[in-house]
Every structure is written in structure tokens, then in C-alpha cells.
Length: 219
Image 1 (tube, helix red, strand yellow):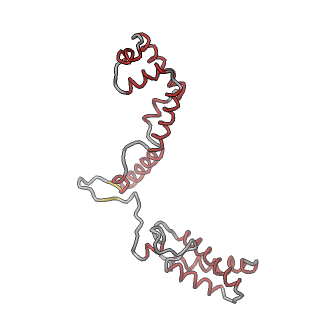
Image 2 (tube, one colour):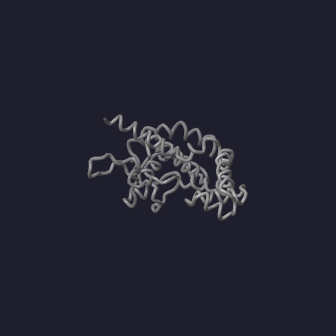
Image 3 (cartoon, rainbow, N blue to C red):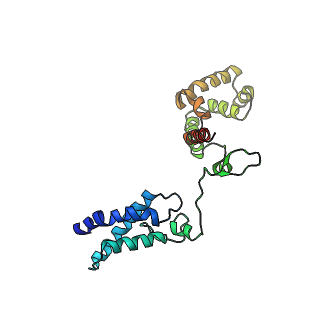
């Protein structure tokens, strides 16, 4: 784009878009007026660049008119797909619809539930489980056979005597390994490992805090 075309875009076209877009282009999904103006500016710049390459003469009003016309039909600067479920054109055609995860849904006992409540699970975050498994694999590999047998035996619910009989060591030896395991785990995993394994993921804490703020505003 030439400097002259850039000047026309900034000083002649953008002011028209700022005035016209909020009143003529329907916001789809999570779009807002400011986002639509930015998208329209990018689309107008593309049109202006193309007509300049073709050597055509157009007015700022022409570029503004066709930009708004395309935006109203669902086109955006990122494309004009009618099959992408997140694209404005697909939603304007009625083939897809965006719904907020915080939107309330009916409940039999008048409890305030959101779509997120209906779809979420209370199990641990898969990323936390995966990282913990990697840590445990590395930790177990660092143990000697007897201490590893004590750890596995306790995890399986077996007594120290059963583990000792399997390893052919005395009760005092298995007791010593169990005590040393507690120290070794804290040294390897960190002193706050017990708090970490029961702590909820940060995204869940943020979500709960947001819901509490909304609940205080509505009551």
C-alpha cells in the first residue's frame, strides 16, 4: 500500500467505519463494536490495496460502503468461510451458535447452574496427573530394590511384614526403609508435596472466584 493510500485509509475511511460499523454490522458471538471496527479496518485496507494494484480509482466512500456490505454478510478480514463453526458467516446462516459456558441452565431444585457445571468433572487436571506420574517414575527409579518394594507394597495395601517376607528382610529393616521413604520423598518432591497433591488447579480457583463475584452481584 502506498503512503497516499495509507493516508486515505487513516483519515478518510477509518472515521467513516467508526461511525457506521456499530450501527450497521451485527456482532456475532463474542464480537463487540471495537473488534468489528478493527476487523473492518483490516478488510478495508485489503480492498484499498487490491484496487490500487489494479490501477483503479475509487473514493473512500466506495471502500467504506463495500466493506460494511461484506461485514454485514458475515465476511471478516480473516476469511469468509461458511463451514467453520466459529466463523461469523456460519453463525449468521444459523448453522452454528456460540453459547457462553457461564450461561445459566434450568435446574429442578432452583439451583443456579451454568453450562460449565453440567459439562465439567471434578477429577484432577490431566496435565497434573501426567506430570505427577513422570515425577513418580523418576523417583521410583532412584530407589534401591528393597525400598522400592516397600513403597509399592504400601501403595497396594500390603503390610510391612508381607513386604519383608517377600524381600527376606526383618521387620526392623522394612520399618527403617519406610521411615527413610518419608524423608526421601520430601527431599525429591519438595517439603510442600502434601499440600500440592490436594490443591485444586489454578484455573478452578479462578473460576470459583468469578462465580462468587457474580453471585454477590445478583443477590
